[in-house]
Image (cartoon, rainbow, N blue to C red; front, side):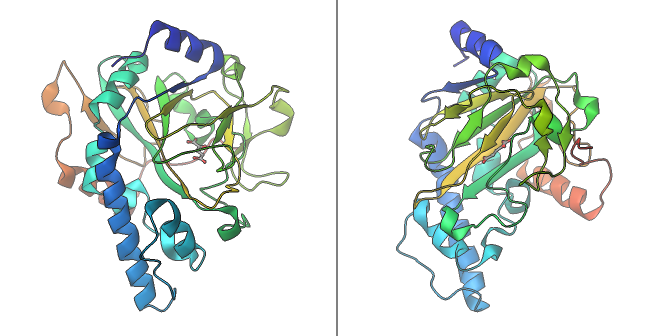
Length: 298
Ligand SMILES: O=C(O)CCC(=O)C(=O)O
């Protein structure tokens, strides 16, 4: 279903919206099953290498990864979308309910932008945040992780949890209304953070909005909306996907990595359905690097 006029108006005013219940269990189940299998296989590899001593086989999706990550930080190596390249993930990137909503921002010709991540933010006690982390992310705009050439591109971020994502679990926070000021300059590190972040002097004194959400909800963010995520103080992992989609033909902001068409009423044959082609494009991007994958930091 496309988003309502009211939802689009809120997005234009605040720079973010939460579309509640956009997805159902059946949309996420194949992906969660695939991730459970992936975690199990990875745990067995590390067990065989004597890197971990307890497989925690009886633990559910919400807790098992954290207990394994607590034993070895190598648990998430190659787990991200572009490395694991799973069938259910590829199918999910074409999810019609998600694309119907995305279309409200991009129009009908939709490309899946290559800037995308799977995150299994572990409980803080297993992830003391001592180095650059995929899990606790400082204030930034997504425009800050793209090349400046994408300045005029119509790109929307879709952030969705695979379970609950409460403030205790380190859900996303956003600064409402600030996207209307456009791009803010970013630095690579500074203060207490060692990841791409908005220059502290440029961060407006606006009360952050906590984007608590539940499985099935999808957050849409402007790429000029400053957002961050905080540590996970619960016992469960905060599993999530952050995907980006854009109007076909616009610059992706990351030429080193492959984009692909997910919807095209005008040229349906250009939609990529072939998982081998998708996998090969990522393999090629890693084996024969070219183009740019840099953040826009100073
Ligand atoms: O999922 C998170 O914790 C951070 C995600 C994020 O910053 C992003 O999607 O740009």
